[in-house]
Length: 421
View 1 (cartoon, one colour):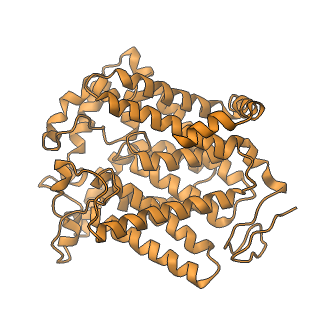
View 2: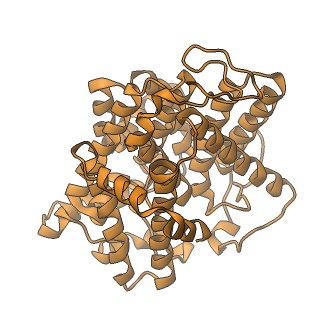
View 3: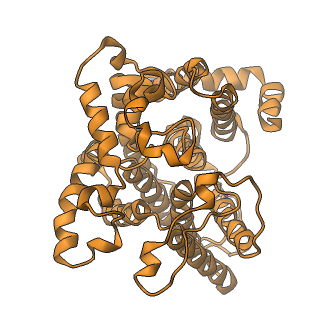
């Protein structure tokens, strides 16, 4: 809130006005439409009766705060930071967050109240398969067990990035520690979707360019179909039991998400005009759809349960038009990143890999969206970076990345940054 207040009070009128106008240029129009659709949805979420007002208000305030922070950092800030440096410092901060969470977990220090459902987290089946009998872990500063999986996955990518750009041995060692902590965290929460998301991002990041990038982005809503057919491969190589919970192959693999998806598709097949624009945030609750599958979550005693698929969730929240805008904006992200000549190879890799990771998780979770706060911040941060015209014009006054091996082919001292004139 202090950051938000600072932005509103201290930003010069002409700077804010100039950047605001740039958002409505032709090349940024759909990005601005996505922002407005999300903001409008957050306001409409305040009227959903089954959602506590404090939760809906918190989502609205969080979105506004993230928007203003990104606006300041990429749009109206005059900080002489290059694209490479901005990503470098975000990577350090995110990796430290995962590392601090790990330390607090080892010290058995709790930061927040543990919901009844998370207190009994269930067995970690993956570790049980190798003879380690323990429950899934709830990390102290995590929103929930499943939610922390995507945070740890992003931490893994950021840690690998820090290792790639590190010049000296101590930084490489610290980066390796961050990598191990992230892998440990993923294993402890046993998030199968994160494993699949990491594999997806690693395999497709080299090809996320041109028409193929668009094909990847527009194919992500079909990930549940891909998961269904992957069952036969997992069965053939004898590892299906490592990824399933329950007796049924598909329901066990996706933890009854197929029930939610079936109910959602059946409901959406009866087209209504409001489906074009959605019901606002918590759209599945506002439309009454959530009542048809809420029995799956009776144990959790919580008021809201997402559709566990970002495409379906966005249809209910911001409508078919919003989903189309979202997909175009994300595909545009890859196009813009591939055209940025000032990015180091490592920076381009982390941007594309982390974004692919997030949209892959969207196949089985409502990510990236306001329902997953940590990953939504990274999503917004990356989107703003790609669509910020001011940053794209910094070619003549880039700061070299601290600790980077190479920025535009120039060797850099690991502890110093000099201005490129």
